[in-house]
Image (cartoon, rainbow, N blue to C red):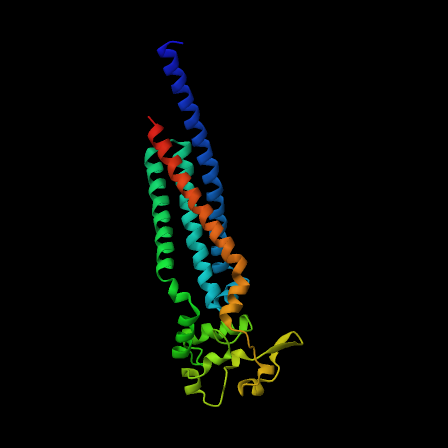
Length: 258
């Protein structure tokens, strides 16, 4: 085999490899584009829906914030998929460079978030939450974001305090509400005619263990989300790996375009 034939064969193989990367990138980004379009559609529908669903969402601040998060993620995925698809199929170096820079920014932001989460991990301990609960929780002031958030957590997960109802001893709550041992959100509820009602609110507020939730919210939340935490961690690793491969493919295609 002559040097010219070997060179031609090498060029052909390189061309086939670039063609494979090109179509892989297109298919991959097409699915990202569809996912972004779907999320954008859901977010816009919730905001403009004339049937009243918007009012239901708006009544819950957490859900309302979630709608804008969905819109933001949808827009980001839509743009990312568009740049990747067009850059790959048209072999446009400018679009591929934008795609690479966009993925790189997302990758660096995720890496920074992971580093910050590791640095401030002590803020997720029982001791930290207990200290904050004692200092800031007021009990019945739903205009206070900290208090209303804790009330929502305790009623949602049927728990009381961070570790137990004992967390309210020597707290701001007891200072404000001296006749109540625990807040109303700690009281046990039962379903009656389709509605949740307190079993014995008076006895609960006086500290009767039979009528209050005695499990701490830290354990309740961790138990509820333990599986999802592992799934989220695994998903984050998968996403970071995909982003790395996407950047490598984009650069290979960028360098291979004449």
